[in-house]
Image 1 (cartoon, rainbow, N blue to C red):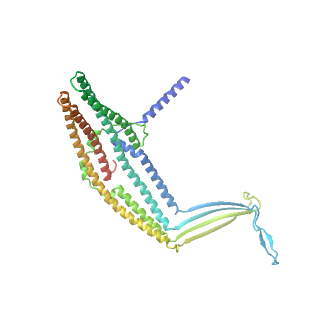
Image 2: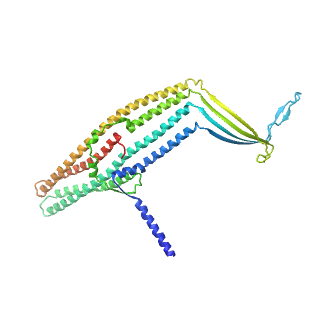
Length: 445
C-alpha cells in the first residue's frame, strides 16, 4: 500500500512538473500575440488598475456630499481636581470649592451633512474627468501595445530570416572555398583567391553568430512585450512572407482621417476640460458654503469608575446646528488664482490646436512612409533577384578563370547587402502599417 501511495505521489509530482513546463511554452500568430498582450502586458495591467483606482477616487469624492456619521467616546479622570475660589459671604475671604466630579464619561453621535459647496460640485465633475483620463490612457496603451508587439514579433522573424540566409551563404562559401583550395593545391589558381574566400567566410560566420545571439534577445523582448517571463518558450506561427502580403494594403492610404475620434485628440480635449474645471474650482471659492449637523450625547459623572453599573445616571443632550461660511476678502489672493487658472485654460486651447495640426501631419507622414515602405520592398525584391543572378554568374566566371576573386567579392558583398535590404524592407512594411493604423486611430480587431 505504501509503495502504491508513493507511486501515485511521484506520478502527480511529475505531472505537475510537466504541466508547469507546458505553461512556459506558447504558440502564437501575430494577431494572437497582440490579443494576448492586450490582456497580459505589464503596461495594460497597470492601466486596468489605474481605472479601478479612478473609480474608487470618484466614489471617494462623491461621499463628501453624502451624510456623515461620527461617534465619540471620552473618559476623563482628574488626577488632581480643579479648585474654584468663591466668596460666598462677600467678606473678602474666598472659599475653596470643587465643582466637578473626579471622573467623567461622555458618548455622542453626530450626523453632518454638506448642504452647499461650490468646490464639491466641481470636484464631482473632476472625478468623472479623472476616470475618463484613466480610460483614455488604457486605450492609448492598448494601441501602443499593438505597435510594440508588431515590431517585436517582426524583429524575431527578421532575425530568423537573417539566420536562414546567412546559413545558406555560409554553405555556398564553404563549397566555393573547398573547390578553390583544391584548385590551388593543383597549382591552378593563386593563394590570394583562397585567402579572399576565407576572409569572406569568416565575416559571414561572425555575422551568423551575432544573429543567433540577437535571436535570443529578440525572443526575450517579445516576451516582455507580451507580459511574459523572458524564459517563456515561444513558437511563432506567422511567417514573414505572409505578414508582408497581409500588411500590404494600398487602400489604407485612402482612409479618411477622423480627428475627433483619435485618442490623442480626445486626450487633449480632456486635458482642456480638466483646466476648465480647475478654473471653475477657483471661481467656486467665491461662493459661500453651508453645512448642518445634529448631535446627541450622554454624559455621566462619578467620584469612582461606576460607568458600567446599571444604576449609573447618564444625562442626555442634543444639538442642531447650521454653519454658513462666507468668503469676504482674501487680499486678491482668490482673483490671482482664478487668473492663473484662466491662463492655464488658454494654454490648453493652444495645445489642443497644436495637437490637431500635429495629428494631421502625423497621418500624412505615416501614409507617405507606408507607401515608401511598400515601394522599397518591391524594389528590394527585384534588386535581390538581380544580385543573386550577378553573384552566380561571377561564381561561374571565377571558377572558369575569367574573373578575379575581387570581382567575385564585389558580387558577394552586393548580394549580402541586397539580402539585408530585402529582409529589412519586409519588416518595414509591417512596422509602417502598424504605425499608420495608430496614426489613423484604427481600433483593435
